[in-house]
Image (cartoon, rainbow, N blue to C red; front, side, top):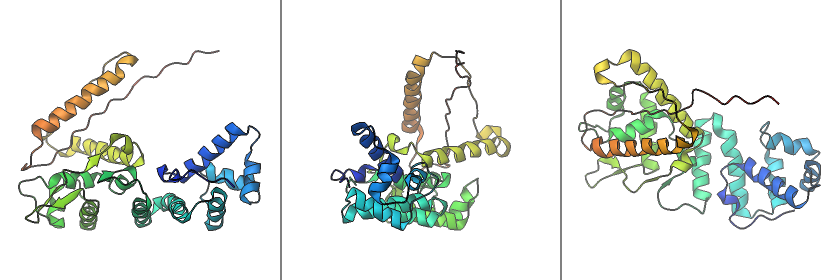
Length: 282
């Protein structure tokens, strides 16, 4: 049985990474260490019980979870955290189960610092309309009325989804109330680009790209600007080009984002390769 360093477990957002990192470190120290030996140490029938979990073919049941926690000598808080990481993975097909696991993980993690939108929280507001509603509070005529919000959104969502989004945005303190009780954006909220590189971020961008495609057919050309640029660059200049795009987005946000706007817009910028290197034949 191998105890894990204090607080080390709470750095993880994927229980499988806990297992793969442990196996890798054990293998580095003991080259002959195998899944068969690990299975024996944990107390399970054979190596396939572990490899099926590590490879994503199944999630551990209650008994295997208990055996893993005993093997790692987790304390009470660590057991709760590890088991909730498993529930987080199992609950991805059910929004309510997924959100319950998210809330429990945020509560259990000792690394919560201020109001921080990490990947667990963001995964609960990854649908495009969450971000749209967050921005809509800046509209001059904004009304905290789910039916009004639904009617203002061009790509329609249900009233229940709007209510759910408003509740989540306020629960996470992305939106707060000012001294007059009006919903406003929380200026203290911290966003981290590195923490959004996950499935939630990809979901959001896929949905917004689909909305842009719909806009080609449904929105008059006088109310949209959809264009592209195809160019050839040196690979070593890619990161510098990315920095130019980031600077451009900051400039647009600073110059045009309004507290009392008339409409909420989405600006998409996609930079991706159209070509790939041809591998030389051996």
